[in-house]
Image (cartoon, rainbow, N blue to C red; front, side, top):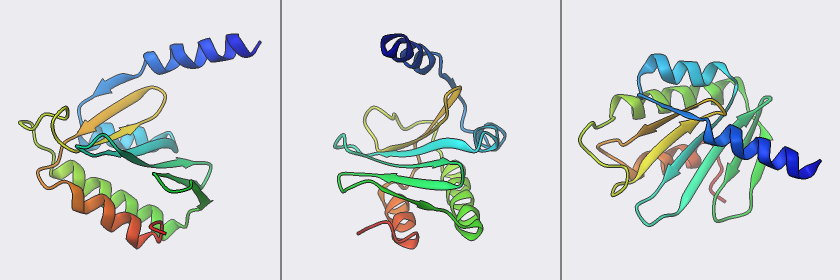
Amino acid sequence: MKKIALIMVIFLMSCTRTIEPTPENINKLFASKDFTFEFNKKDGTCESLSFRNDYLVYKSDKPTLRREISYDEVLLINDFIQKIVNLHSETLDPETNSHYIIKNTAYKAVIVPRQQDFYFQALTKTLKLDR
């Protein structure tokens, strides 16, 4: 039974469709209320914020942090992500630049902002996630 569940998860992950990082598409991801916001650095490391059932899960090279998220924090995160979407560059390559990925089980949007590393660090500091 566990093998079947694992195969289903792998199949679902492979079905994720990449979409353009437009405000409409990002709102489609937000509407699921179950999505992940990743920051992938040039050096290959990754930090992520996942949102599920009013909980925020922060994963990095430090221990994983899970806690409830407030309405004000949701507004802050939505504003932050909107700024990142507005800074998206069509010319920068995610393979060679730091980039963001917003995804759920159905969709994935890759965002390569013109100004890169500062924003995720500022968000994690504001949310008091940087221990």
